[in-house]
Amino acid sequence: MDLTLYLVTGRYDFHDDQFLVVIEEACKNGVTLVQLREKELLTSSFYDLALKVKAITDRYHTPLIINDRVDICLAVDAAGVHIGDDELPVDVVRSLIGSEKILGVSAKTVERGLEAEKVGADYLGIGAIFPTKTKETPLTSIETLKAINGAVTIPSVAIGGIKEENLVNFRGTGIAGVSIVSEIMLAEEVDKKVRSLRQKIAEIVGEQV
Image (cartoon, rainbow, N blue to C red; front, side):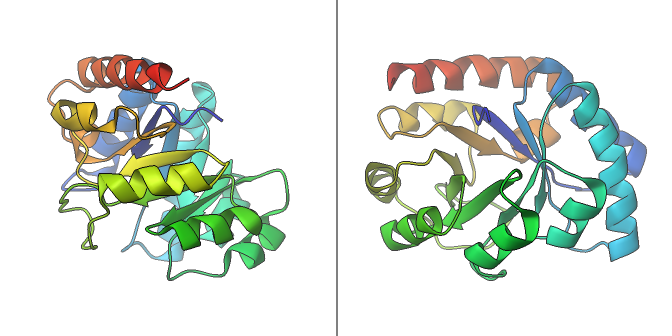
């Protein structure tokens, strides 16, 4: 599981074909995971879209993570699922998806991170670090990010308002990578943006090894 550059999808105003083109360009040029996040779609539409996205991620050997929906994850045989604070308990999700699938858990506190690790999480998503229009949520400080990473042994990604110009803030924080939405989804040249982000975050993560 390579968490270096973790794309979380956003629909914005894309029609399906445009949306899929962005995902393919991102996979082709170096994102290491793709999380399909859909809050508005009905189950049947989410399932159909997930199958289309998985066809792309499989082509580029990029693991597909489904946000929140364990049923969709299992139905399309995605690589795993990511859950937040308001979803099923972590241990219940682990029991549903089995030991082979990836389980990511959102964490804003050391306590949440430790508990998630204890009951079966494979990685943590920590944030939002910076203000973001993608999701209304309280911010998590860089100090808290460091504290969580210092307490757990599983890897983490930072998420929330992350742009190429603020990647420097993650030096020495212990993250394994970053989760990015709009900086990739809305990029004018997705290929160039992904390659640039991948290089810069890999340098920052590499410095911590």
